[in-house]
Image (cartoon, rainbow, N blue to C red):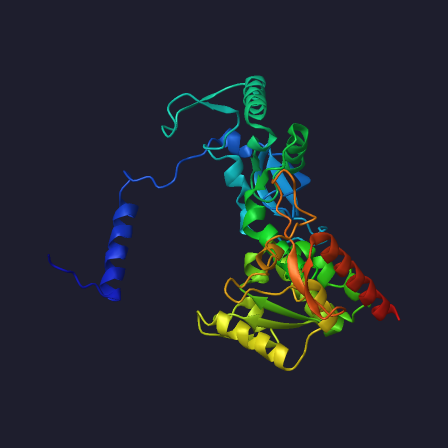
Length: 383
């Protein structure tokens, strides 16, 4: 197979020759004549204020329609958080709205599972079928056999699905978006430091000073002393439309410092006080080094750590899990055990400083210990 070497000069000559040939002939029509009457008529453009439901942030937007059809979407400058900004997901809602694959009616499968054969049915028929299936499953297998699932952030039916769960007596409600981001981060934050400390623009009010963290120890903090560690996150690029706004406000209005850990010089790294361009795959080493330094220098709140960790419990060196009372005392009877065997409320083991001995720590006593520590911390912070 031969190859042709074309220089910029030869390409220009060929392009000029093709252009001249097209101009000389009348057989090639590049533009079609528009209907003059259609082109001359006026189009009524109407602006509507609404909100994007592409995610849970529901950014205020302005939608422009012409003759009832959406022609343009833009951010609403009056939006308190997005301040007129929108993300690409919002701008693509026009394609979603007018996509030929946009499902407009309930669809019932008519073929075998996996054949992707469907037919449109009425809402009345769809509701009757769903109600019959749910009632049959609950009657035959119990309320936990019903499982409701909804789309990601911004779904219109979030509260409705929860209401259905409570109605049938179940608790299985799933939101795909929440399972991927919100629930894991909220759980880890709440169980480790006591509140949602993630730099999430859903909670931007907490970080820009509208709400302080006085619930931790009763003391109001000076927002100017806060430091944001942005690790595995790019609020200015990958968050909602107001992600960059919240971070910029925190920097400019409150003097918040930022540490960005990212191999790339991202938009957030450019504005960071400290940018750590670590080698990919070395995140764990850096995290362990930070933890070691905090422990060695005792740069942690001892009372806070005692309250929010399992320090009172003795740990099995082999399993790395807290000892259960039954492992130490085979005849021990757990007062918090469920007689029906449905719920597992274990009794752990702790070292009791009052008796200078190892004692069982059942759940009611553990709750009492935490309550006592909490009251003690509140008295210390207010005294």
